[in-house]
Image (cartoon, rainbow over all chains, first blue to last red; front, side, top):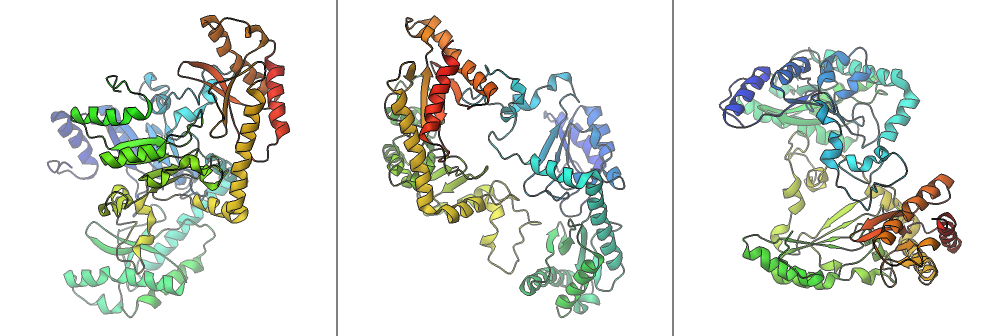
Length: 290
Length: 290
């Protein structure tokens, strides 16, 4: 968007604020991500909150995928700073296993100024007097329909409530911890295994484990364009074979300058170490001739 | 929007087309309604289709509420012309009783020109290569996620499919016909009944029956502002009493220059004549002292 701003990462934010302000724009939002789709990476929320506070900018946290980690005493530190956000998105239907859809947009009405009281209502209300009569005999604040993007809708949060009643907070914590433990198990199994190459260094922050499988025919090749080209075709063929055999399924994608790699994401706490072992062996079985 | 255009109803459309075109705008859409929320009224779709064809304007039909009448051989004529629309919205979760939500947007890709092929995809696709890989081994047209407004979502249409399998087309027809028969029964019961006043003349087109209950104290009053003022308070009080007694519930609203009136809508085919009788008597019981 702004090629003039050369800084990367956190350093880019104050530069972008300055640059856009100088050019007559009003920077109003920083959208941080807690758990990216591909890598499962977490932005440094405390540092972002400091910048947003300094420049009076709305801080949004997209915790659609990573928000579930708040249920775990072991992992919730990854979201430290989220409590300072003005708004947070969070999908209990992802990491927490609530059936599709169950998505929340949480807005802190009074974090910036008292004038934000009633914000959702003033953004969304359509004043449809044939739906929301103002002369009813009960407290009109229970008419939530006019505060939301949709009007008539399914009560998705009921699914979360039921699940919470059934599993309890400790149940959700065990669910999260188990999935992250399985991701770490996969990471440890493949980090030094012949034929496997990790896309990013270090232990995964979430349950995303991103890796290439390098078949024997490519292992001794120079790291050039031809190798990249051939490597990019490996994951699609292995996935196609997985689907034909019906044994397992792992998604893959390219990202930036990185050619097609596997992205194993674990969100089923009923999986076990032997499932991870099977996955690794299945990739080797289906990819060794490529 | 355009006070210069004095025509009302159908005659307004060609005048609006001419007026906006003369002022440098491009009229592109007529949104007709098949079953309005309050009155359950149907726009004359054939006449609208003729105008849209003449001026090459996109014809949309909002059949959210009225679309279900297509299941009835007796009532579907009210939607004659809908087959010429470019797009139709239809909520099986309303008249057809499918659990919330089940909403469809039907788009005729080739009605205006062959270039509309792939329209939904070109409007909605985000090209997220990490979600919709283009090098998969199967027919990519099955990846419907990138053609829709939402990406990951609940398969709402499955509820309609199951219900259709269970009830059959004849079952839906019986459902629709029964509800409309009950609405007509209510209309016939109150049209000449003392204390009841219909908001619009004639048999209801859908199951909406709109009426005032006029308590004895207002029946001999002149039709002036004071009467309107007092009448406007009748429905809210009766509804509040209904809720307190827990016997029944009917919504009410004002519309345009018409003060609060009841809008009885029937969508439950398990209701019976005695339920309608009870409703009328309950309104009289709860409103006679007002």
